[in-house]
Picture 1 (spheres, rainbow, N blue to C red):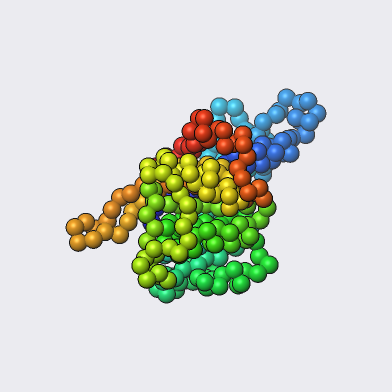
Picture 2 (cartoon, rainbow, N blue to C red):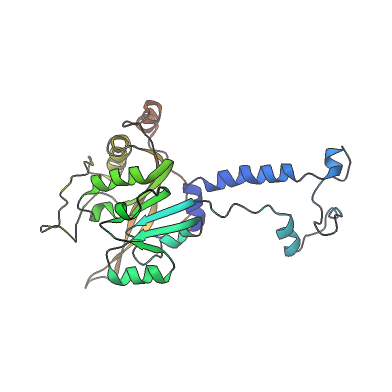
Length: 275
């Protein structure tokens, strides 16, 4: 699994920016009568007594909570779908910001754990049929595409299941090295994702400018996060780097030319995330 925090997830999905504008609107709508009348008692007031807070006095925690606008709870959106959710540890980071959370997972043990966490567990192979008529604000495929026999088909299904302007979050260990554990005799996928290049930078550029735009997605942000991988007899676990891509659904089959020029001329945009 890879390691990230809710603050990183909020930053990647743009939730912080949206909340800042919402907070600004709340403060604007909560002006006191004195402010509207041009009076001189402008500023935060004690909501219980209506008396302005004394200048220079420190606020106690209860007062801070009462006067601070609260961010919207559903910062992910109404519906989240996590494909290949594992034990649900990574899912929980986004689940707190969604009203409804659906997941898929092949492991029977992990499926039971996900149910215990309160998520609706869909069938790994029939989830499209089980969600007929439902669309999602955010769908995640975290370290899944390199373990999937038909990654292009999966991405097309995801595109159909996203709301207009919905987001897809992909995590991949690059350079890309697919290994299919289920459904493949030789552990190789039956569909080639078509990533070109040999280095991490070349493959991210290939994903952003060729592979994903042709499937109806445009890159919004990307970053790298630590990824902990199961070890072997020589080492308990391996520390790798996961490339995390945040993509937005688009009806265009090709990336917007201005955005493509930005990628090729200035390098890919990278969001700063504290690890």
